[in-house]
Length: 228
Image (cartoon, rainbow, N blue to C red; front, side):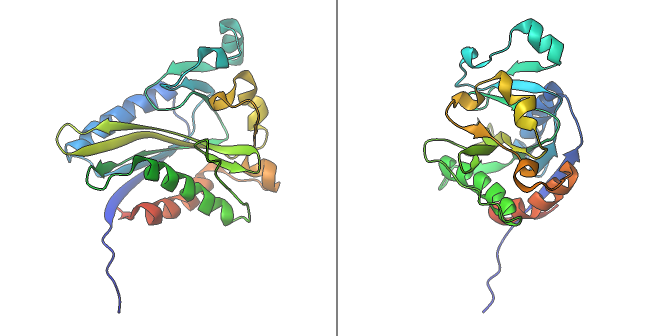
């Protein structure tokens, strides 16, 4: 006997490179439109120029570079409204912003984070990489090295009982990204573990747009979407 699984539409948009501030404004615009029913739920997949973001659990001392060093390296800094401490975004990192409505009935915010982690774990498994979790931290790990950071804001709906999500995950794809940006911070406030990337682990070249295409079906399956 076949069971019909009800899914809902998802729009997906890939942007090769976009300034962090511009993408943050875009998220806010989309969140309002999704809340008002003017836009279907959306997954933005993109990369940013070199940027440090400090979340609501920020510790400014975890930014190790002085202002003049930041200018020399061309790294922007933003204090933002997602959860978590400091992280790095830059070329070679696939950033995903799921802009979704979560109804209050049966809502499990921690479960949403675990599902986001699972999307990345499932994609890594396609390449024989054993992604995992560390119980005390959010994100995806390979051994003791972090390959993906996750930080979410749950925006309370103005019209419905529930939340619209913003911010999301940052998945390291290109080799050497740990040396490029993460050496200027204490990533997520975690000092005892390292950072890795898909290419560092596999020795394979991976274009970000390809990674975005491959991750999308995992995301749709995990969260119950079909293409808009």
